[in-house]
Length: 104
Image (cartoon, rainbow, N blue to C red; front, side, top):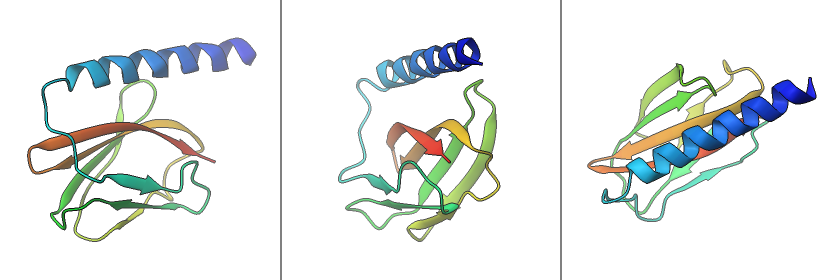
C-alpha cells in the first residue's frame, strides 16, 4: 500500500510539474482562489477578481478527465469524486491555472 501511494504521489508531482512548466508564457488568473482544499463537503468554491465564466476540468492522477464544468457562480459540486488526489485546471478567458486538489 505504501509503495502504491508513493508511486501515485510521484506521478502526480511529475504531472503537476509538466503542467506548470507548460504554462510558462501564458496568462495567469488574477486573484484566483479555490477552497477548501482538502475537500470533505463535496463542494469547492472558486473565485477570482473577474466575474467571467470559468471552465473547470478535473483529472485523476492517471490523467483521465473525471469532471468538466463551466461555472457562472463560485460553487462547484464535486460530490461524485471518490476520495483521492486530483489535478484541477481552471480557465478564465485566455488565462489558465492548474492546481492540486485533495478530496477526503
